[in-house]
Image 1 (cartoon, helix red, strand yellow):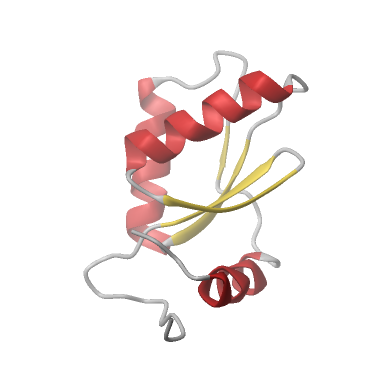
Image 2 (spheres, rainbow, N blue to C red):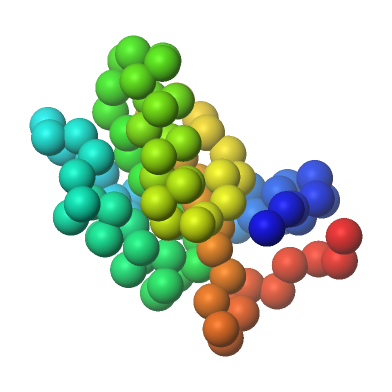
Length: 98
């Protein structure tokens, strides 16, 4: 799924007030964490995930793995926060037209 810049800006605005739903722990990205992110996306469509690592390469690899495993779209990365969007059947969030 591709998002236009207008749609990404809209989702960034919605995500601004959100708190992180999932936070990676000391074990990093495990199957349990991926399952939790998947459940959160099914419930909320738009979530924040906290990836607390200072290594940029490792953070990029983790973010890419999360996107790949969940089938979500990476909206934004700010610091340790990753904002993800994946529409559900009900389409709770109405995106603006492209």
